[in-house]
Length: 282
Image (cartoon, rainbow, N blue to C red; front, side):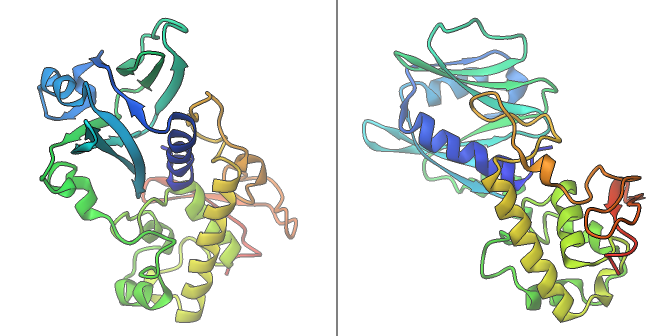
């Protein structure tokens, strides 16, 4: 599943390549992709057609676009890519939609397509005056953004106090920190020198600060590389990122550590693979 860096890469692509986009027509190719208004693809197309996409923001792994109609606010469009969702930016009539095309937004000259092989991605229309979280309810369960001032060692210490769950599992909890998944949890734990099995409540404040800084650094590096090559993620041009070639431990179980030469381990924690170095991580 795309994580924060991949979703942020998509957001930046939508801002830079698509910009303000007038939607002349909306076509829902698969009604299951429309989460709100649920079971009403016609209502979704009526709400979006004639609007203009006027800027995107990211919250965790969610994307939210402002909608305007005749220059006035007209609600919002929410998107979650899930496992394989992606946007494609095309000249209109450039090529016919593939079988995995779920929603099409057309202007006079261009088309923005939402394509999703696994069909888990979702789109929401949020009516004007309705709180975003009331429609996209998953937003209410998100913790602070990793780059925010609220995400600090004191916050982590308070939230993890007395917890016996592995620190790796804690990092994957979107209620603790928004946007982090398996790849960047493994990478940040390696950079911080903390074993993934370590009980969360036993990590000192000093090590939590080191972990916070490592997570921010890893995420910034991956955003700069355009995301990772490890997932089905693709940006608006159809390419994925370059961070995969820089990974220290993720998916490198059985290979020598790039820092010390020790053979890397691959364990399972909470049903997820964890990759780590027995020498560099204590």
